[in-house]
Length: 438
Image (cartoon, rainbow, N blue to C red; front, side, top):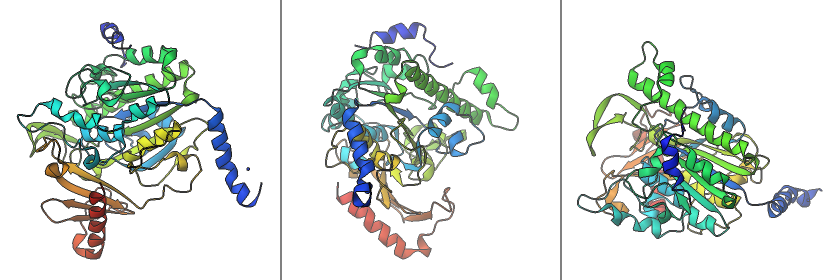
């Protein structure tokens, strides 16, 4: 099972340093407010899957892959199945989680700097914004970074503790999940770390797809391509590590005082053979219309919130985005989010304080994997997109717009721009307003 703590464990230990009428309508809100004022601040655990298809969970209807631990989390939590990431690429997607901003706002748009530019030149953007760890620190939170993290030393984003001190994907932090869970146990066992914020973003089920043989045997069935079997086995392996983490909270008596947030950094559709990608020099293992694309297979993610006694378990069909994660966590911590954050506090809906999130549209953009400019998002832009109610418009920088009804056609097989010119003009205007409002 993942998290086997052998020599890796010792290595990572060193890195841990009101009755009726209007009055009656106000009652639930006042009860909530008073309860929050009396209670200690909650702990927060953010679990980020890496390169996983939005339907590849039991709780999202998959019959091919087992995710029992995340299924139990979803059963006890508020599930938002219509969730999106603004950018289907790991570094800008993770930067959105850290900042609550869209890519063209935080300006972390690409995985790699322009050719000949040192990676360190890209780190100024994370330093320039009030990140989630920095904001939580104002309320006394300690924070631990583990796993995927592109922004240099963990302290650059304001984490008080962390595993990553160098590296592209996350350097030493990438041992979490695959090799050890010990840094998390050490962090949780330190009484000074409450309230705490834990960033658990293992490089799973991300390639390399090298699952334990016991899991691969489960999925290596006749007629299934080995590459798909390996991906499915990685999904279950990741789920096992989530079970370890959630179990660790239970054993320490922390679960009832902890808001757990789960999502995926970007989507994935497994390619059965490695393929060339127009931006990358090496072959990639994902199919078109998934990672690095503006299509549903790259952008969609379920969002799950679990906070015992604070939210109402169930499925919420609102349009949500990962720009909502920072204001949601800050709301739980009773902190006012920065005024420029575009997201909403999902706890308002999940707790019953509000009937709806209050939006018809969410937005995003696709950027080059390797930047042309460190500072100008427009120079790296390839596509903008908007989901408005049932409709999705994809607007490339070069080429005609594409329109889909993604409720009827989530795989985007029928392009409708020529049949709905008025709808195209409407959604292009929304996109222009969003982009200009940065």
